[in-house]
Image 1 (spheres, helix red, strand yellow):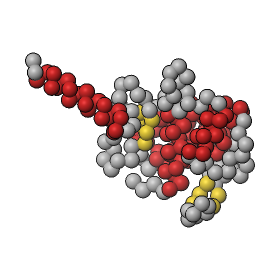
Image 2: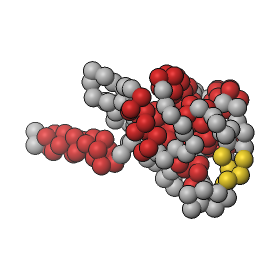
Image 3: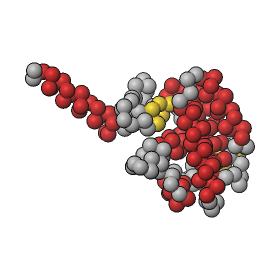
Length: 187
């Protein structure tokens, strides 16, 4: 599956945003605790065109996170399409060509002056829409580890990825299964 740089960045930002709800240590349970944490998120994902952030941005981005979660957890393509249509329409999607930061011409979907939530909704919503149109919505996944729940986009050739990160969840479960087999063989 061919995914251009901007679409990949938008998908990565959507996944990272979803995972802010599960990556924080208990009892917080949310890595987006304040405007400073939101600023770090913006910096880490090199989200361009973002002005000064405030409490309203934090509230709007958290609400957007829930909407993206509904797309990931949609039971059918039609449901996901309905959610994405509403998302990008409300974001005031305004496609425009741009070339910045050393990247050749590409399309941005957020309007100039858009809020952070509108920016993420437009670019992220369109990136998810591209997957849906390509018949690849099943690539939107949740980690198969029972105690995880992190989101990821399975970009493997054969769509076989089951865990958010093979070095942590996948490896941990494989080691546990191996140890269980070894204990069973010793009986």
